[in-house]
Length: 265
Image 1 (tube, rainbow, N blue to C red):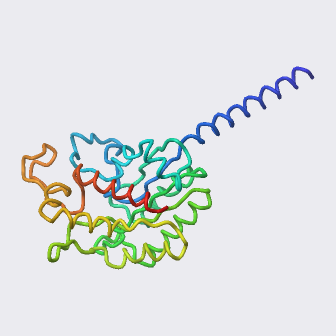
Image 2 (image 1 turned 30 degrees about the vertical axis):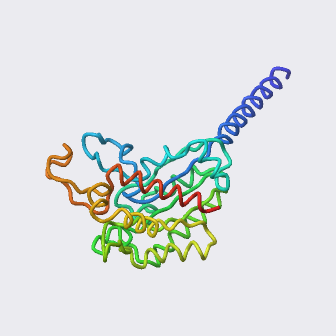
Image 3 (image 1 turned 90 degrees about the vertical axis):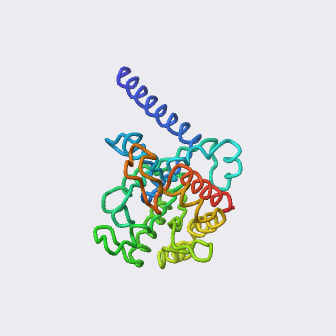
């Protein structure tokens, strides 16, 4: 009998220590989950790929988001983050719309891992709007429904959802200013955030304003994937891509997102 009591006590003590250990480790770290498309993705974590020898200099803004969270920044983000450190977990993947991100189980995996106090940044729209690509296309009403789902289920887990409008593409330019290419999807993201009382960063407007200040020539050459043949070994024929970012563009957009988070207070 004594042996059985001692055994039960040891098992209970072990379980208590495991729970306490998990609690202590969670208390000191806030995970920021990024869900979205290629403009947000971290290509260096793509499974089975040699990033430096296949995709570089292609870079999503989420790829350089972690480095923005120093001690001073975390103090300024105390309205969102109550821990002394942050882990950015970038789950965004190229070609995904709200619907395909959900249907592939990518959202379910995030939902399973969410802990109270975590933050979810959601930025979709580029692929939802692609009518010619039926495998990913989502009409605006469907787009809004999936954003509602992501927001509501994030809250179910005690985490904080932040809706982002889609980052600007490098067109159309008119009289020296970059204009909105996302049409109704820009407005749809804002409408859902307002409807649900969710936090929102208008990344489309922020990026349009920032790129316009830099100027079309500079942004085209330094921020987006535009360069001549031979500039990079991974792109022997060069690149003309006004959607995806080079490192400087990814860093600039990551900073815009951080500034958006700071302004939420």
